[in-house]
Amino acid sequence: MTESCSLHEVPLLREITVPNAGISPELTVREVVGIFQRDETLLALPIIDGGEFLGIISRKVLFFRHLGRPFTMELFGKKPIRLLLEEHPFALDAGLDVNSAMERLVTADPSLEIDSFPVMEGTRCLGIASVALLMMSIARTQARLLETLNRLTARIREEVDTASRIQQDLLPLPAGRFGNIAISAEMVTSTEIGGDFYDYVQLADGTVCIVMGDVSGHGVQAGMVTTAAKASLHTLIAAGTTTPARLLAGMNNAILATAQQRLLMTCIAISINQERRIATIANAGHSFPYLHRHSPRLLERIENASGFPLGFESDAAYGEWIIPFGEGDRLFLYTDGIIEATDQAGNDFGYDRFETFLREHGDVPAEILRRQLFSAIRHFTDTENLEDDVTLLIASFNNGPQEQS
Image (cartoon, rainbow, N blue to C red; front, side):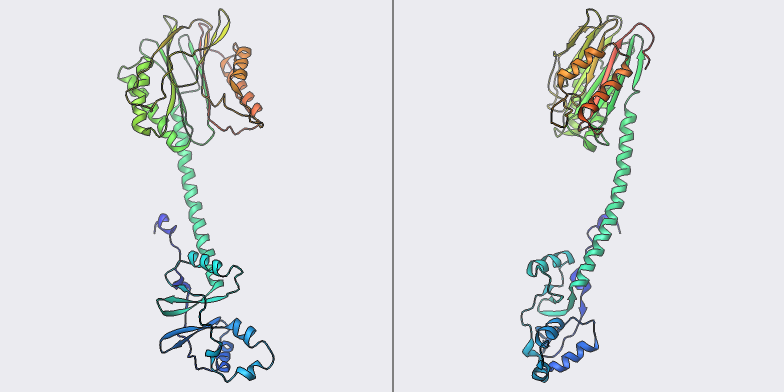
């Protein structure tokens, strides 16, 4: 039996019913008392007359209500039991599952004064079910369900961990150097499977291509979109598509086919031509990158060439913007998890704090800058568990040796 089936294996009421052929309504009260005294497990007896169910006589009602007063046995002992009959007792259908049976019982008797009830199949009484046995059956069912859920949870956890490792393996190394261009990047996910994505690659002519994306969501679906982005990016580059605008257009169609407009991805693509010392930027609704220029020393937010996010519409076209990018310059790419990180009072980390940080730390080695920024965000939010994925990538133009952390 599969686990998915066992989740629905809830016993029916007939399975916990104690069969009882019943007694004649003409038996005397004393004779019925004797039956109860000989079998202490009996909680109630059906009263049957010629195959017709008339009602029940309950042990509790018989002994505590009818015979609990002095001299009642002398008064009733020789009378037929039909005089004490419960003609319209609470009864339930044998085909009910135990959970539904308990729900109906509590509705009819919230204080659970009933200790047993007849179980019916049509007009025929199959026997008596005890409330205690009903509750035990529900408890066993819940225990089995909990055990199954625990197994499924462990399996899902294992599969999510595997998916998380695969997603991390899809990312390039956190640091790389291609001629004069040094890359330093870090991604921290708020859940096991994040919606942020970055990649970088050197093309055959020495141009360095950088891509960063942010899916509108988390979890397995977001992970599928980032995987589609990674696969389509490298497929496009292998096929000779290398300009930022054409890369975004190709990735857009791949993500639209994967997510079918249920999830979108903001994305930015930048190609850095080392020989010409320029950076070409195309932006699909992503957070605007910052340029920290070495000379003259300034911090600039590049707000040009922005279009719709990937996965929004088919065959979307994206514009490009070219900026000088030379010795000592740095580009900062990031996801909005940095800007939207909130403190305990609900205030955003925001652009002002981010820009102040970049101005004050713009010349710090990239690996150290990353650590300091993530530390500043955690200090601001006063938590280690961020509400959104946070990604930062720094591209530096440096003729000298690779930066050290």
